Image 1 (cartoon, rainbow over the protein chains, first blue to last red):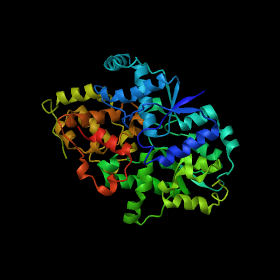
Image 2: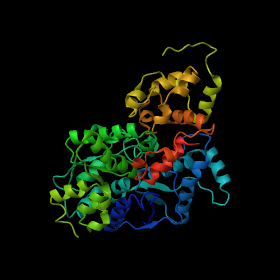
Image 3: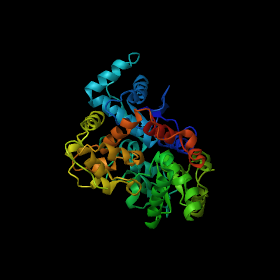
Image 4: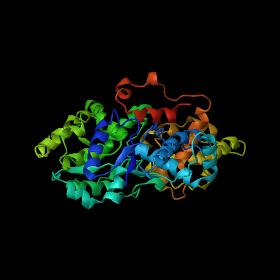
Length: 295
Length: 135
């Protein structure tokens, strides 16, 4: 059944490598989708104040757009969008008083009661597509590639919107194994990368992100796979500062969808590796995985 | 730093405001410290979350205002999923932030952000940072 796809503000520009590789994989998997019409920014973070409902309006508008499109499911690729839309949806489903206030306030919109399903590509793969189908589509198994699955926060917490067990998730591990890679467990897999505090407290943020990378490497990972553009910034682009300050070695960072595109043998240009650290392509080249991929 | 505690030093208004904004009952906290042990920011905060909860229970407004904890908290929700008392600690931190931000205070300003950090930052970093740290 056709679903709505919600890109969010970062995926058309800074995280084009996440969107473009994912959409190519949608096609390979036979996922039928429409990009949500008139989507707006979800607000990136869910409002945690009980008396602040105005910030719930933006994500709820997106959910109403999904309903209008006639689809019952909306899929996100960005972890933060997933979290914000899913939490707004839970609130509209479960909190009668706030639902009424928000519906009354948005008097130009039809009433909404949380009846759309919000999913992330990862749980959609696990629950709707299945790892067997993913395995069948692999043309270039990522053999010998040791990747640490980095979950971050917003796919797993709070529990009511978690796509997997918050304390011991498996979905990204299973995903990597389905592509033929070796998933490297490491204790920091669900540790926060400091998120937006990279702007509020950059020094603390750098230390926290670095600890995560070092932990992955210490456990034998050659690269990290993740799903969130903010994690990618903190763990990927910020490596320049880590290298300058601590003389660290490069750790390649991939969006999980880029690894899928490579494993499916999809054309290289869908992955926009120019937006990754150079070490990402170098690692794939060194493993002989690019020679087998379609150009 | 020693705290002076008496019936006169407890700021009831602060307590009721935090309860109202967060919807959380911080008196349920029994000081086990699981939150502090789980906090990724623990090296960088001046008061661990356990202490924040204790200060709130005692209504210590001044000590709470001095702590950088709510401003370094990234709302990662690790403390919340592990709290044996089921307290949504990120909501308590949000209330402490809001109490200051609603006085028309901004904790970050675009012009004072380090350009080498701000330039490449994705849109979601900007949006969430301004949502969390400005009025």
